[in-house]
Length: 163
Image 1: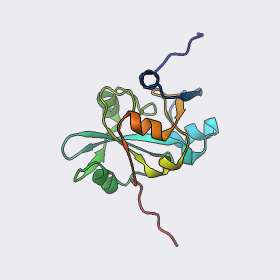
Image 2: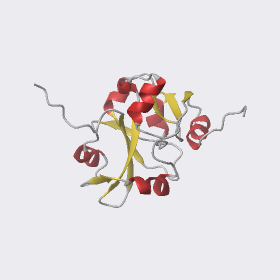
Image 3: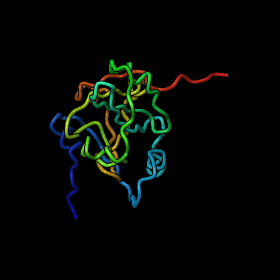
Image 4: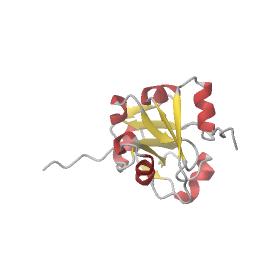
């Protein structure tokens, strides 16, 4: 009790002197990011999920996008200079990243992967990402995050059909 346990993600942010706040919630079983955002009263467009994919080259990549959105695999591949990318199977997430599904974050992984954040985050002063374990969210500046991990912003969502 007492002192909150820091995750690798929090230690990384501390080392980089990046300001962040932590929100925690009780979580017996991870459902999805939308449920997490609703539980914490976070706007869906400010709450981002981390997806990990593997390119045709064998390299791994992280993609951050709003929790209610889907990743456009073609745009994701183009954003990292790959012919194609495939999302990592759930059973491989821990082996590759060191994190579990629902607690995966682009910071503090076993190895820093090339990371692309959906361009909508660039206009947000702060956004929420996983804190490195289920039940923990970190709120921080998207700009500061991208700078610290040498990531980039790009359009990685499917084009919206407008009627």
